[in-house]
Length: 300
Ligand SMILES: [Zn+2]
Image 1: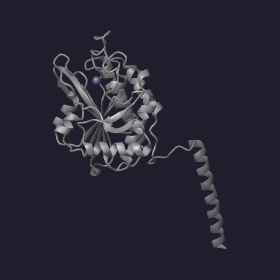
Image 2: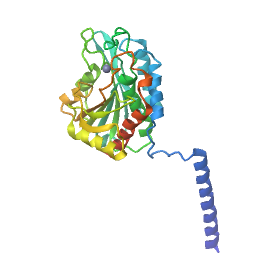
Image 3: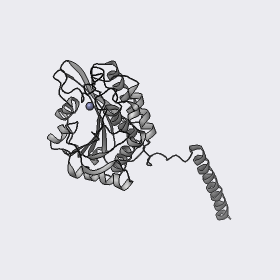
Image 4: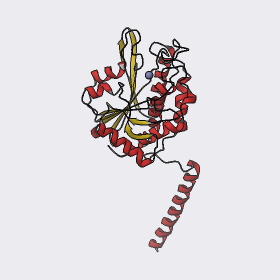
């Protein structure tokens, strides 16, 4: 009898559990729970790009630059990442790289990077060469991918420690004697870790996105990521040689660290006032974001 009573109460408990589970599913709308893969959402990423443009011009020294930096820190913290900034000065201007960090240190460090500054002047624009660049693609697209990754990766078990690094002052090169990629050069100069891989995303929002191998990038790492994209059927990744770029990956390569630049440099609105939101798409951001998410999930 005791056995039967126990069985009965066990059955009740089981039905109660099933009922609770069904209620949960209904309430949660079948959302993945914590530690389950969350899909990278291109529409959210596009919104994150639009929010950056709402701050206006974002070149070093501008108020938009300070505001977008504070906003990135807030976004990282809201997504549950340990966030910090790395302040420094260059040619009398205060700059800062911003870092979000999550995952186990013993798995090694993977850096995903993007520059968050925009070019002070649209010097490739024949009509408005002294206006600032809005930077929807050149600046906002890479940051948007990283911040949407912050949201989706924070809910997952990471095998490595992931650093999302938002580099400052990439895009003031050849203006008033400034160099290109100042923030990433400083980052590498003071870096105390040895990342096992560095992936920079820059200009990844083009409506007509065509990502070919950047020729200075580490070939093995490029092939690894393009192979993940092929498995997912992401047509923007084209396994053919593209341009050779100097970008935020360059300082890492000089330090002997495997690094790549994911970039579509065939963008007619580059460094013009036409680099606006209507030239980028959520679908393009999603192809890049979902590829990087799947690559991180593969425990590289
Ligand atoms: Zn640029």
